[in-house]
Image (cartoon, rainbow, N blue to C red; front, side, top):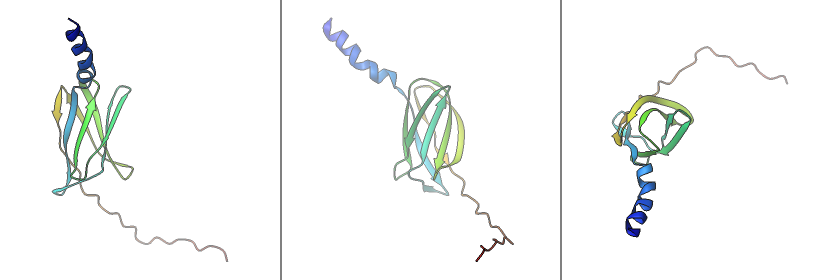
Length: 112
């Protein structure tokens, strides 16, 4: 009886975080490393960082719908709404940023 109680107590933390989103982040066929992945549901917020090969794993406290944001260099580069029920796999493709070019811009000269 004591062994059963101890086993249940030891398994509680594992069962509490049995929901997980895993996947890979790519851009034009290449892995994207060190992207921040943020999962938000109600007032719950969990974060993870992709590894050097673009892989990520994010543990979540419970099942449900999460708003997922990918952040690169401080800017949000992708969002998705994901329904999580246990183990969920979601790969992300980040579109390459279009560089903006400003033409005809003159900066005022400072007073001498």
